[in-house]
Image (tube, rainbow, N blue to C red):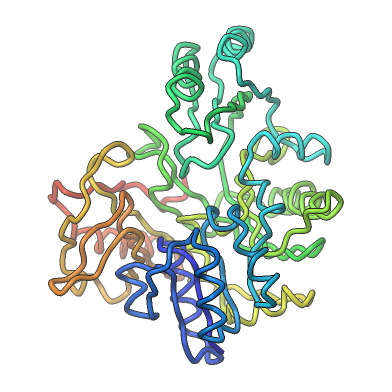
Length: 417
């Protein structure tokens, strides 16, 4: 079979790496791909939002299956276009992907379907938003309604910080159209975790939970990023909590989308927090999480192509998981998530330990080696039977980037905190 993966990040490199192990696949393509993906698949220079060009390529190359990685093409309707062209594609339609595309819609959806989440209100008016913040007090959370590459969330510790966030979104246009509407919600205290599932209509097949670290600095300090590292499974997360999240969040969400005429096929992501009143939703995404995918797929024993085929056909994919622990740390450009340089020369990756895997997120391949092409550049990961060995291997791998001022990474990912 010929398979196409749409996207260019670390999530897509992980998907490509998993698909590359399938004995069913004869040709693997990525659009547009990245430097690391180029080592495993044929990269084609088509932008993720060039929907017509992607459909034309899939037809011309007689692609059997397409996996859509990122949220932007999903909301641009790439799945709708592929389906209309009679092509096999794995991912939700733009109607179903709205659960990620609009936080305001997601909040209303959760209220309608009795899915536990923080109380919130949505605003377009700055004065009204500030009055609500004054009434509620801090800490409080301010979110841009639309897509903001993981950076449209401010957890404000003071009323002043919350007001600044509102100003920057509604007045300063920090996130453009995505921030023309802001959702202000209660701060929830607890440990966060990510729970994803393969979904087709009302059928839900949960994955191993993972924990992502959003803050840029050690000990969860500094601004939010797209994610600085992850690990799976989560040692301190009880199975009863996971079961409750599946029963009260994932299954009702899938059923609710069907009821609203937005039936979902693909990967549904629930960003959750474990509170004293049970798990609650922080956000929904309509695709694999990044960087959680980089630690979840290495633990999956199934053939990913077979999983896609089974789920789409309404069959239980009978997911099997390694009895092991995966952890990994993101190598970012110094300055990220603020301003940062691109085209940084990436150190020789052949020096990495053998038991470490390297996923490319923002890289290009040149005649002289790899160079950076984004804020999050690489993901250094390891899988071992126990947590301490996995963490130890990643630490060894990070030595390749030690004392290099061009790069930044956290040193505390994977300890199960």
